[in-house]
Length: 142
Image (cartoon, rainbow, N blue to C red; front, side, top):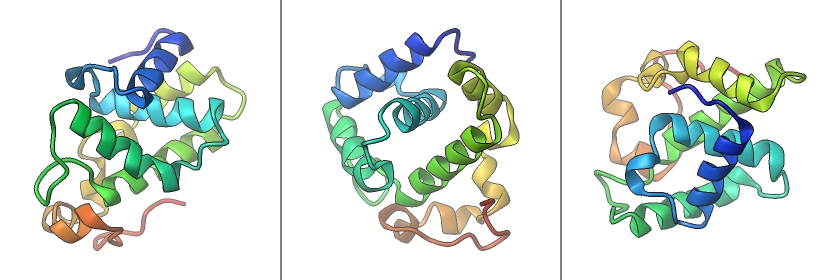
């Protein structure tokens, strides 16, 4: 999905925060749009600390469960926040929607990008879902 405006990002981010966004709209791209918009436009929100509860609450409001096999995933969330932060740092003067689209079209924007750093078994383990698990293939970019 390509985003056309920062307003589109904002609508998704606020829909997520307010738990009004339909679950089917919280796609892989929408996760990044939400994280990026909140990082830049709401810097007072400490995303590494507050995002887990926000995602859990959103999942439940959309009819999902946060259990050992589905719902909130700590390692994926923290790695995605890091990828978002990297892209923002590398594109400091570009419009936010352009940075988002660049991220989504990069290898870090692919839904399988983490498998470069973690084995599937480790990334999708209960331990990785419940807490941070270091990569076992390559170190994560800083």
